[in-house]
Structure formats: C-alpha cells, structure tokens
Amino acid sequence: MTLHFTDLPRPLLVGSLRNRTTAETIADMKSGESDGARAFILHLQLLDQPYRQPEELRKIFTATRYPMMAINYRCDGGPSDDERVNMLLQATRVGAKCIDLPADTFDLDSRKSLAGCTLPFAAADPEEISMRPECIDKQMQIIKQVHALDAQVLMSAHALNTHLDCTQAVSLATEMESRGADIVKIVTDCPTVDHALEMLRTTVELRKRLKVPFVYICTGPHGEIVRPLAPLLGSMLVFGHHDYHERANLRKQLLGNLRELYRIIPWRIDDYLE
Image 1 (tube, helix red, strand yellow):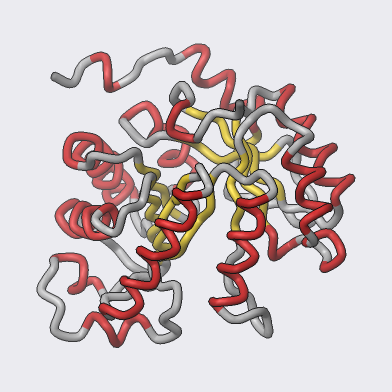
Image 2 (tube, helix red, strand yellow; image 1 turned 90 degrees about the vertical axis):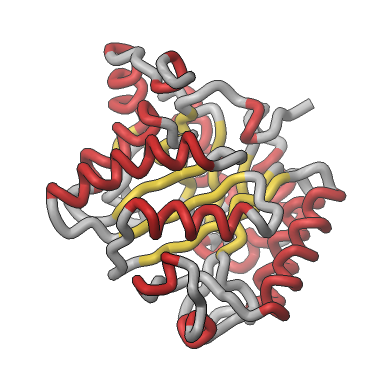
C-alpha cells in the first residue's frame, strides 16, 4: 500500500512534475526517483487536456510506488474553482494520495474577506487566504471528502508580494491548520537577507507551534538559501526537479544536489528540540 506524505522520512525530497503528456510525466518521475525523490507533485493544470482524463492520470499514479500530490492551480481562462476541485477529487479516486487546496478556494476576492479580521496575519494583507465563513465551510467539506478517500490535504497560501514576520506566519499557519489540513504550506516574499534569516527562525517556531507538518518557503533569490535549509529546521519537504526544461520552476533546485546536501549535512532540528 502506498504511504501517505506524512508517513515518509524527512527531510522529504519531492519531485515537481510540470509536463504536458503522460509519457513525459512518467519519464520525469522515473528520473526523479533515481535522484532520490520519494514523493511527487503533479501539476494537473499544465498537462495537455487529453492527459487530464482519469485513465491517463491512473497510468501516472500507478507508475511509481511513491505517493503523489495532485495540484490544480488557477490559471487565466481556466476552469472555475468548483471544476478544479472536482478534478482534484477525481485524481484522488484514481490514485493521488494528497491534494493541494489553496486557502482561498471558492473565493475570487479573498483579500476583501480580511477586512475587520484581528488575526496577526491580516495586517500583512496576504493573498490566497479567505476568511469568509461560507468558503471556509466548503473547504472543510472538501477536506472531509478527501479523507474519506484515504488521502490527505495540503492547504496552501501563496502570499506573494507579502512580507510575514514570525507572529504573522504562525497565525496564518495556525488558521489553515484549524480547517483540518494534514499539511500546511506557505509561500511568501523574502525581500532581504535579514528577512531570510527571519524566515529560518520562523521555521523553527512553526515546528514548535503546529500540530501538523508544514512547508515554509519563499520566492526570489533568497529562496536559494531558504528552500534547502528549511527542512533542516523543521519544514517537512523540499521540492526539486530532475533537470530544467521549458516548464520547470527555476526557483526549485535539482533533486540530485539536494540529496547530496542532506547527505553531507545530516543535522536535524528534531534531534535537539525537547
């Protein structure tokens, strides 16, 4: 039986699959396995339409013994949130062991929902977090449906162009955790070296405060240092590529390099926290 994401040893190397066809995806995945990837994320929205069908997804999910997370982010002119979520549920039925559910799902203007919110993160005005009760309820219902299919939910907030201090990041993560997510992921901006250091300190605090595993990373040049170090400080995983191609996310390091980093630096914060 395929393990869940939260059952795997950490730091977890996760291959990021951003391909157009089933064959390309499987080839990329097999290369990632040889680099040390022990889980994968599959971007459904980047697959060409014929390869998003259940029979094609099943071929991908059964081509590896490692768990896969289905992602289906919004894109211009793309499907509605309800359609995207239905596709994620469909992927779960044919083999995905986890889905990425953005915390603003079902809310196309989530920033307005922060008006009057007294939680610390609201002052930073982040994207991708809805505080509308009706949207939160629908998200929680989706989480229950995924759990009923023996799969997990990573709830994400891509708070781009937003600088979160430690208190704000912890409050955002705690709010997402409260909705029933199995894993919490926050991607934020990191404009300076000092803020990169603040993010690493925040990673330790998140490890102490959250009851569920988390991912805390940033965009931009400082991501080059935050992404690989965060798993040593408590973040559960790091995303990487086997190689760089036209659809690759160049902010993600190569899996082979990450595996070598963790081989030569076996330090883990869990060995030192009480």
